[in-house]
Length: 120
Image (cartoon, rainbow, N blue to C red; front, top):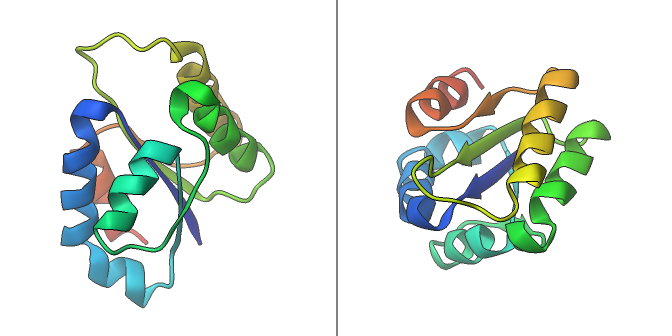
């Protein structure tokens, strides 16, 4: 199973904490992680194996959207910062739309991600 992880700058530490709290599930279920570039750097430093793509503003969100459309990505955990502006918002909306089109579970906050990861 492939899970995409993305976190806006103000949420990256929260993503690492989330992964640390659920590392047993990730290892037991042999889940592979794919991420946008900067999130991937933080996750790698925390000791997780992750396929880091481009940074979100440079096309990473679009790359993950492509993986969703191709059927490669089974779940997306995207810790969004709703209080900040993001220049790549069209890519974010495309990713969310493709998750809906392809029926791929999408969590945009830790509470929903918690429910999804426990359902794995």
